[in-house]
Image (cartoon, rainbow, N blue to C red; front, side):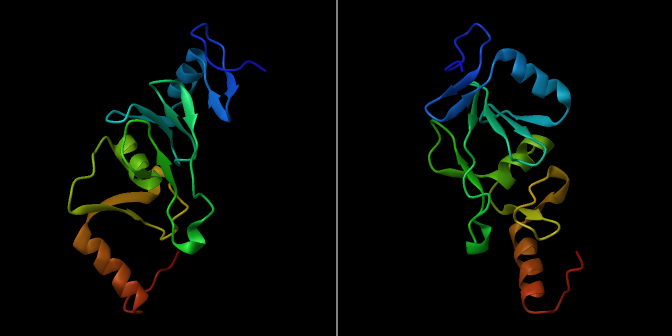
Length: 145
């Protein structure tokens, strides 16, 4: 198995990371199943399960995909960026080309934190988002999903 992308179009694994060739990157872009996150130079598929750094053509490890029973959200670490970035926010920003600003949040329409498909995500002001979840938690609203 080749070790890593060496500029000659080869791909493979190195130190647990998967590197992609330029042809593999172009194939993903042309498939229509990926969007580019311009701020962080990422290629993100339609449900946030594959995130690729366009700076070094490496598939970033997504952490916490199955840890949501504890309340944790899936996240990824981006080299050169402080902290962790939530998958649902990155997916929303890439697919809708809309950077999340202060006072807004991304809501899962089906209330399933593991469903990060871009069609399930919507931007809400933080107060509305909190109100929806508070009303459901208190039983004032029902969720039929």
